[in-house]
Image (cartoon, rainbow, N blue to C red; front, top):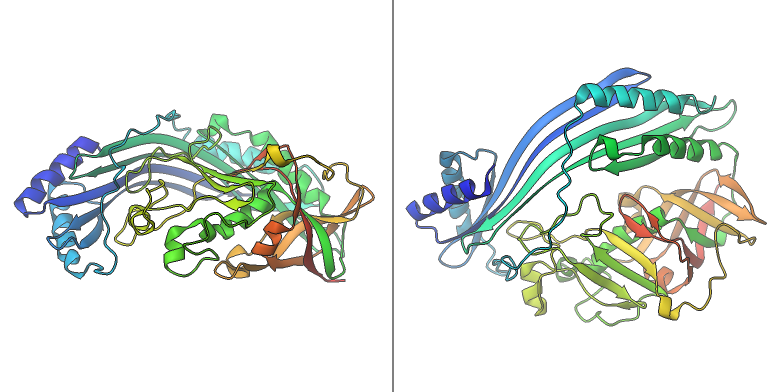
Length: 449
């Protein structure tokens, strides 16, 4: 698991095989997780994983790639040999190279690494949490989905040009999803997720309280009529929607023709000027922050939307070369490198914000509050911008709210972003980023009434 040792093994083996150019990324992890069912252990799992992805360039600069879990000197030599053979079938139409930033200084992050709590402690903690949640209300009959886990991992990257990077971290998470049932009423469900660097960092009580409050608040529900309504997105639901359409920022998706953006979209006004969105993988609140991506490019804060204008795309080495720019630190590792966003921060543009006439806590008008969007993979057409998604939420009128029995929200992201009518000032931390509440002029709602 030592970066220098693995690099030395690969360097020696590459020389014997006459391989001059290579790079690799490796991951090592120890994972522990538990699930319970009314106090009885449902699943106890512990695993140790190590995987190394190796790329080799041949004399024609074509790339071959292989993956191995055998990190012995002999195992790495076999992997080099296999990757070298695969390079004969590399993609001639799109060449890949080392990131030009792979040896640039990286921002030092705090390597929070807690000590393992162990399966026994995890099980005991989850049993108590499940029991407390069951006792929060007589209607809560089961906690069908629950889990408590901790992971300890190390990531490394190196190449034949002398780049070497590594970092270590730990992470723990709990999720509790309750199901409430009442006579002659449909079951209602909701939950909560909390994460931390270790078990001692997780606010388990707030997870219990949030799961209970959400579930109980949906017991008094009512069907809603189909129509167009003013919408307030919760921070979680708006981030879910933006992440579902993150291909609009993705240079790889643009090249592949599966994005609503194109190569010339930079500078286009795509949203209300109130909207700013950043991708900030190194944000101090991001538990999963990593100082470099799969190609060794340093992670950076990148402005995606600035005062409503599309400001940047996210790039790997190959897409950056095609677009004649620099990699942004969002790449995976492969022969055809994937690109993805890290951690989104949504905020209101202060220099343009002269009003704040909508606030979900005191607005007395009629609107729908979307708490959580569901069935994302089935209801989103990312290449077209359209979506039709079931959601959990409330109908508000005169300051009073009632849970919506079942409904679907549909629209077009390009229209939605321009129809934003207010972005509240206060931001909220979620597991996938930071966002305030977002108000939209209107969206189509299909209800059961």
